[in-house]
Amino acid sequence: MISKKMADRINEQINREMFSAYLYMAMSARMTEAGYHGVGKWLMVQYHEEMFHAMKFYGYLQDQGSAVELKALAVPSFKETGIKELFQHVLEHEKGVTKSINEIMAQAIEEKDYATQSLAQWYVNEQIEEEKNDMDILQTIELVGNSAHGLFLVNIELGKRGLGVPSDFTKLGGGD
Ligand code: OFO
Image (cartoon, rainbow, N blue to C red; front, side, top):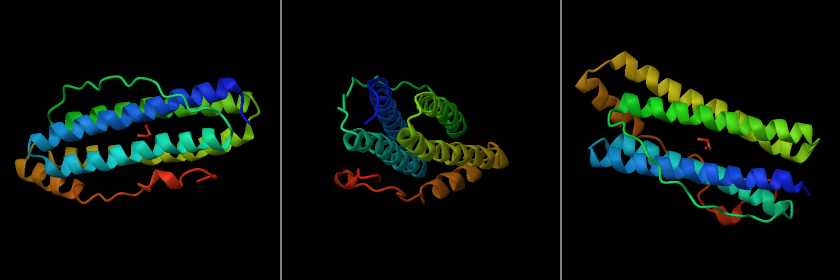
């Protein structure tokens, strides 16, 4: 069992992860419409990653006998149309997610909630990877500069990204 305060915070995090998914889905649509099909695919893979993050918390609440309480999603808003600016937005968004995950860890430590600390550690590690991915992409974009040929190749490279998380959420839970 976890505290009601912790269950509330995890329900809030489910909403934040779902918002991340919604944001990347919206970005994927805009980029694909603009002809950046590879970037659009990368972002759609990221959408799946975020859904997995949300569902991992969902499964954890159920494993702990706590109620899942879904909240309304905000409409994602972003103005960026260029690849570099878009990935700067993505990196800033992920830094905010890292802060949010760290808050859960801090609360779990304060409550001496070792189970949630263990779960939160998975997300702490995941955020290192999320931020690194975005920083690597931004570094590559810096290297090619404003070269249309370079951005064309970056777009192709990003389109090679495959799904790295389970897409069957019926199998989550039980410590997955
Ligand atoms: Fe992008 O890590 Fe979840 O939100």
